[in-house]
Length: 382
Image (cartoon, rainbow, N blue to C red; front, side):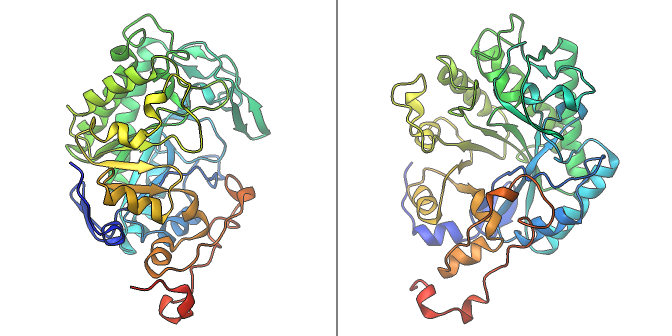
């Protein structure tokens, strides 16, 4: 049902989500930033400060966090599979909560987009031995992905268990919930993709089989958290390198979403097709990605990718989304919500430090001065 509400008021007003009272409907999207520069991949005081600064978001989604050692596929990304990592994340969630924020952990496995450099020379694991044709960010720079090895049924079972273990660790680390990463090019999207998943067992060959590991992982995570605390992020139109939608993509995601309606999820986050032309491709039906999934998914829908304040307001006002998540605007604007609220222009951010570096380009972006003191021309009329 479409219902029209005051746009800015709805976006910036409190919202009940997953049993939590959020300050607004703006989520900080997951963003890999590569700041866990230690052998144990433990969040540091840099992470504590980075997320604390951005706690005015209604909800923070952590960067994608590795569920086990096999999952590693990018340098300096933290994990959630050791006691030390749990302790590091606890410091982060404590700081976010002390600042009045809420935070979900996003858990992930890189699959075929990893590289032998991360695994002592061994091939990365994937649904099938198909090279995704992408780049892996290793300790010696970007390297071409290789042809991975197909996961055995036992390895799939163990991986599903490790999603559950990571979810349990997220709870112990003080997160408010957990999200399964099935967007972009990682393991879950690889299973959902009929070009990268050519298995002939129960995990390939049909929409139901391709979606099986996603549903099993969600079940394992829900078993640790209970109802309404586990969500999923999908990006059905993602196209990078040799990874792109196929003729099976729409039917696969139709099936997956129908299964999600049978689970007690907190939300479905959808990365929309943004700045790409789908008119002639196999996923033309998904050109309006949010509009496509809104009537198909019966729970809380979070819209993601390329939003600014105006477009976020429109999605909420039209009832097309319940929340909107933003990534890049939060990098250079730790006080993004205050800037939206008071009409203060946004600061740019440095792309050179998105994925590497220390404090620079990470925790040194200043908040705007007190909005009450800002010149009148910077403030939008009430």
